[in-house]
Amino acid sequence: MKKILLAHFCLFLVFLSPVQALQVYTLKEGSDLVGEIKTYILKEEDTLLDVARAFDLGYNQIVAANPDIDPWIPPPGKKIIIPSAYVLPNVPRVGIIINLAEMRLYYFRQKNGAHLVYTSPVGVGKEGYLTELGIYTIVNKAKNPTWFVPASIRAVEPDLPERVPPGPDNPLGDYIMHLSRGSYAIHGTNKPWGVGRRVSHGCIRLYPEDIEKLFPLVNLGTPVNIIYQPIKVGRKGYDIYVQVFRDFEKKISDPFFYTLGLLARYGLSGEIDFFLLRRALKEKTGVPVLISRPRNPELTENDR
Image 1: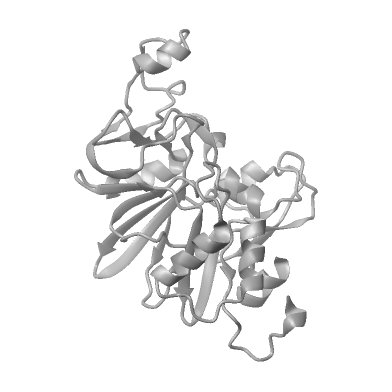
Image 2: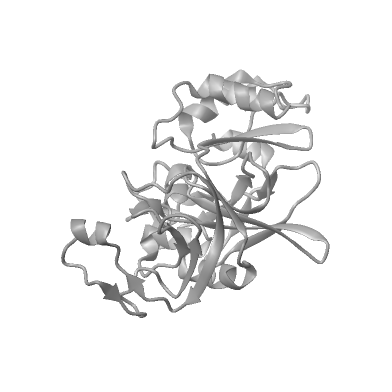
């Protein structure tokens, strides 16, 4: 896997800096990919959770990209992958798209004539509470919300109060955007370690610094498309990529033929290297992987 990454991405060594909130990229014609793969050398005091938050990644991302690293006691001096490159979701790029399988939010908008995408990791519903798929709209926004605990949650957790005022004990965090169906919402959190995990009762949780930046950008009426795509495909120039996440809902019985169908549907089923595709589907690193046959004659079988 590392050889594939080194062969097809420019890897940048980066240093842990103040938290990077709500990444924004300019969409480029002919490319379904944004971002770049980076590397980072672990320090004595680091955990993978710290590193994930610093680079605006979810826990699921940092662990999948570095499967052999202990997330709680990673070895100092070890170089790890920062998987901050993304194949854009295979749906119309309008408004907010939340890919539950990826545990990531994308917000598409125009600014000064440029087409932009903002993206951040999210926490999603735990088993039995996954957000219902479909199209919603933003119907209400509030700062410093009070949490009125739903009766369904209190029935399971009777020790909870009927309401939780704004403050550090409020699981909604400092900002909330209500969706048009059910009691679903996009909001902050008082437990940032839950981003990139299945932790909620169906709401979408963002890091406090991400929701703070996203909140003023989103207007009432903005469409929100909740999807479940553990496998995404896309093109960058002549190259074709796949990005694979764990199918925790077990919705795809045959990932290989499912991906071939995706590639055909989006006109990407040209010169596919089935060896690379099968390996990407097996490893599920959450990193975009080149699966088209190389146009560069210098890349041989030995480079695999």
